[in-house]
Amino acid sequence: MSEIHAPILSVDHVGVRFGGLVAIADLHFDVHPGEIVSLIGPNGAGKTTAFNVMTGFLKPSQGQVRFRGTSLQGLQPHEIVRLGLSRTFQRTSVFPDDTVVDNVMIGLHRRGRGRLVDSLLGQDRTGEAALRDRARALLDWVGLSGRAQDKAGSLAYGEQRLVGVALALATEPAMLLLDEPVSGMNASETQVFVRLIRSIRERGITILLVEHDMPMVMEVSDRIVVLNYGRLIAEGPPAAIRADPAVIEAYLGQGSAAREAAQAARETIDA
Amino acid sequence: MTRHLPALALLAALAALPFALGHNPYLLNALITTGIVTIAAMSLNLLLGFTGQLSLGHIAFFGIGAYVSALTSLGFDVELLWGLRIVHEPWPPVVGFGLAVLATAGCGYLVGRLSFRVRGAYFVIVTISFAEVVRLVALNWVELTQGPLALTGIPPFSLGLPGLGSVTLRTKMQNYYLVLVVGTLCYALIALLVRSRFGRAMRGLKENESLALSVGINATRTLTLAAVISAAMAGAAGSLYAHYLRIIDPDVFLFSTTVTMVIMVVGGGKGTLLGPVVGGLIFGLLPVALRPVMVPEAQWMVFGVVLIVIQFVMPRGIVPGLARLATRRHAPGGAPARMPAEARP
Image (cartoon, rainbow over all chains, first blue to last red; front, side, top):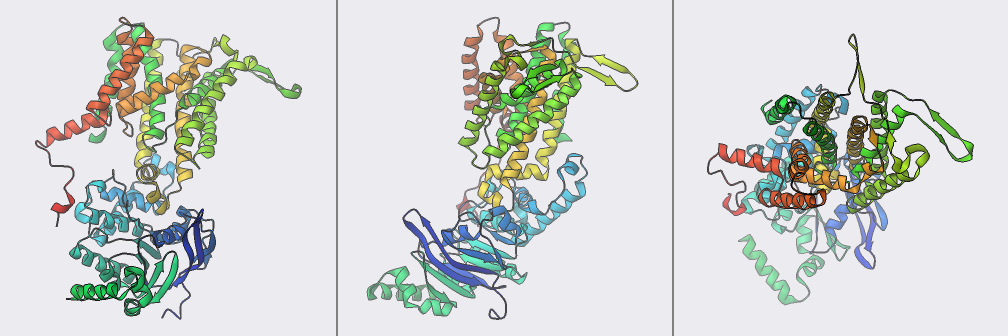
């Protein structure tokens, strides 16, 4: 199916350098509509940097990113999200001092297009009510309706991640970039999150995922892109990536002892 | 409506206050100037409290408002470069008020536009510099502003009421209610703004800027609009000041007044609607209480001590502190605000 459609996102020979430090050397891959693709790699491989380039928070030193055929070069983050490319953040994914439902209301910024004058004259009541309904529907979707009136900053880590996803979904994206969404979640929370990712895809939203939780990545991804030291070292379906010697080496270092340890570890996980 | 109950109660109390005081021009005068500075503090709170941007030159907007309004109502005759001469005949003070609001809104746009691309410390520095430049202009452009000789004989407001003729606000009582009405309007405007989509955008930018950008909030536009509204409100306060005192000199641009405004906002509770009003009343009337016992220079020490005590007892300001006390009383024992993450399934 990926051969038929034009890519929704193409990362076209992107490089990022901070002074002499090469964060991304040359990154080149496509994501096709409806796919769930994971971007993996050891710490410091350049995954979050890649996300920051795709969403306009960083300007690439070379190359460009195209989304639905439009070059994102020179666009600000708020302009990129308007094109339908939305993201979550690794660490701070909420507006901590607002309630969960108000968080989503802030996220619905693009939707409540009521004019300032109208809202000042109190003529935007129906718009506000519709917005609140929409916010509640989104919280329902990510499974947070019970926490709607709690302060977002007081939520558990995993729940804050869900708020972040609700905020990203509030922008009605065609594609969603998730930055380590299940870090800090326990196994059952992760399973719930996997179901959420699938339900998001079912609604036609393409997903690109950065994640360290390998069992989760293997379970959910259609395709995996592997980065190491800012370079793409492998790309393919989960089964192929799992067996790829370059990937194993990147994660575990050279040497058969390490490889055996990896094998043993994998067996314990599978068992 | 219960949400606004404390504000409405305060409004009723302030409306009744002159009658309770009886004939006391000294206190009434203190209340009027306090009210005017409180409006300026409310405008500062819109930036500092709701967007998190500190304007340390806020007095510039206040002073520009005062001068624009005064000059509009006094008229002027200045010679610019290349023999260009501008003569302005006096216009009514109400027109001056309107022009003061427009002019300061324009200044707010310029300052916001220039500095919000970089923000933070840069904004603080740009605002301080702006205020100092404006003060020097007011001091040295003697032909227009009379410099340190001050603009005198500024006419008081006169309000034309359809069918009732016009009233010139000469008495302190009249000016008190004028300030109260304008202050209430500013309060209502801020209350509406904060609850609107624009208000949510401001809160989002303050709490988590990257996240706000990632949901499509345009930071420059939102912050510039906040600066425009804030500056216009400070300009309105400046206009009230000019037509009440009827004399202004470049000292209206003193940095210490900005500091007083910041103290009012922070002490009362920044980012709350009532905070700057409560802080404004406390720190505006404190000099009145202290005057019999100490000189103005010593009062600053008391200001400092009071602020430190407030921050120590109620770190987020008086209004949030009292609000917390009130909710605690409603729920005795009080459920812990934060549940440890591990304790949840």
